[in-house]
Amino acid sequence: MRLKDKTAFITGGNSGIGLATAKLFVAEGAKVTITGRNKETLAAAAKELGPNGLAVEADINDVAATEKAIAQAVEKFGKLDIVFANAGIPGNTPVGGTTLAAFEQVIRTNLTAVFFTVQAASPHLNDGASIILNGSVISVLGNPGYAAYAASKAGVRGMARVIASELSPRGIRVNVVAPGAIRTPIWKGAAPTEQAFAVLENRIGKSTPLGRMGEADHIAKTVLFLASDDSAHVTSAEIFVDGGATGAPAGAPIYRG
Image (cartoon, rainbow, N blue to C red; front, top):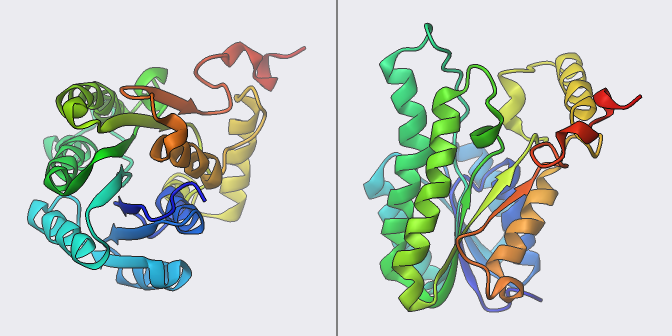
């Protein structure tokens, strides 16, 4: 097991990528604390994780709540070896149709809260720990309507490199995983029905070189690599897990003859 006797802290671990990662971490021998805002999904996730999991209700925008959640994690399982700052929100912020509050909420949740999650965890990290931040292909694709989201995820990339530099004397590695379109609950707003989601999935498949939407496990396994000693000499890196959407867009089915 690649994470035997390791301790991990995952924000937004009650669904989607966060939950998939938490389950994989437990399977690989780790003790995992997850946070989230929804009591019901947290309770369900806790049952799935079993005795090596701890679910704590906390909003990542509440710095004090995050600090308290980390304290609970350390009290139960010991100092942290892994932090996955995964929680985030989508947000449509088109030019000409966006309020200041809407824009700032995306930046606060996806960028500012990530920094303060890392800051809260840093005194409780073992030397040689691994921090993984959740980025996105949107940081480079220029998708219309996603200025705040793209800015927040590009900010995560820049911030990760600075934090990697700051924490390198302790041997702590900091990396970014950048998912493409992944099958998670984040799409409920854009595709609220099964029919709408099928249309969305078909469109994404045609514009992705590997011809499909990604799964949460694709991201979880990449995060496992970055969390484990398999990536012992990897820091300040960003790994795109997007079926080739950013690196080889011309290979997508829509462009094939």
